[in-house]
Length: 316
Image (cartoon, rainbow, N blue to C red; front, side, top):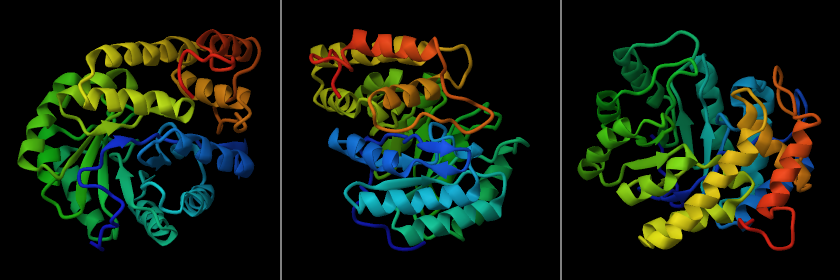
């Protein structure tokens, strides 16, 4: 393991948005849109950026485009906040290649979910992590996101993995609060180990229970809302937590609810950002951007929430 960069907190705390990947077509970045998106998110006071995750459509992008994306994001962010780079792949070698590109570009940490397609057993995953860490020069966060289609990191696997030098935390996107509670005792044993919540609907309660932060997709669109909720929960300002949590749930019930497929939350985010003039809303195939009437429905919801108006109900 190399020396960790000083910008990466141990544990890492705050809102670390899983950034979308702005595209012009199936293998071309929307460079101008990417530049605007980064500044839009950072202006909201976030505590880091996570690129090439699920919300970033990483599994649908070419390795060439992923590497270009890493370079452009790290160059523009320029260490203002930590940049975490997803390296999940079905190929061990490609995960290592992405990790090397991230280190060269100046990223601060890596994020890894279990390889998808053929489910691995827990002993195989632990051995895989040991072999992988021997090849990496940056700290690594585990990414627990079972059933897409891949196994999750079971509690005992996480506990064992936390003893491997360089593995510094986990993002839990299981939406399983029983599993989350199983992870909490690990923080007492390893106070420098980071626990981050994926589903933003669970952000408030997870912070109140001792989680360190959230990887909230909605912070692409409304970064200040999620930062405010995180800070209110840290301060245990329960009336403000309740109010801000309701705003988060309104976003989920409106912009994320358009369409009928599992990809709708990404389509909704990209569509809303396009409506704001931030970036293009092209999605990597086999998915496609919202068309009429879905785009009109997203605009209608944005107007109802005040995102497109002069007196916003939820903060940009």
